[in-house]
Length: 203
Image 1 (cartoon, rainbow, N blue to C red):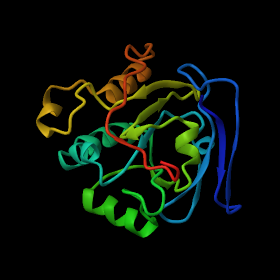
Image 2 (image 1 turned 120 degrees about the vertical axis):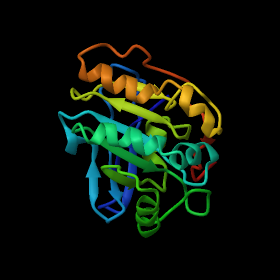
Image 3 (image 1 turned 90 degrees about the vertical axis):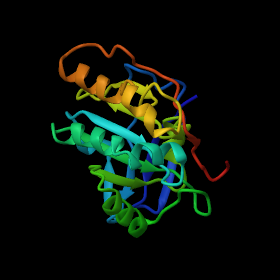
């Protein structure tokens, strides 16, 4: 069961408010607040009225490497942000676990990979990740300008770590974004996310 969440780094604490309602497609996306690589507080509510993509990230995961080494993730990011959308990359890796990074490390990675997220957010306690039930890296979510969750799952329909598969894959995120912008319902609203498990503190 997913949970309503608020993560407050400014208060040096993160806490969750349980909810009896599952966060599902069509429901309002749960607000959260995290710190970005520059130490700034960023909330989902800061982007009210905009299309938002959430990407769960672990730089050491072979499935993530597939999409970044090929440039596929950067291409998808650019398509969203260049049209006025917002891309929030979230790292829920716990300290001492694979993929965990501090702000400086994440900034260097962004530069090295030439990636273009609107913000790279740090969730070391995993509260936001668990609140969204993010299970893998990557795990993708699309939120429409009205604030409703309209897609959740994999980036595409080729659940492998093979770069060659990207050429024939359906990019579920881009398809969902294009359909939202065209005022159409999202034809594939849910898919099974694939990749490495998110390295939460208790994982």
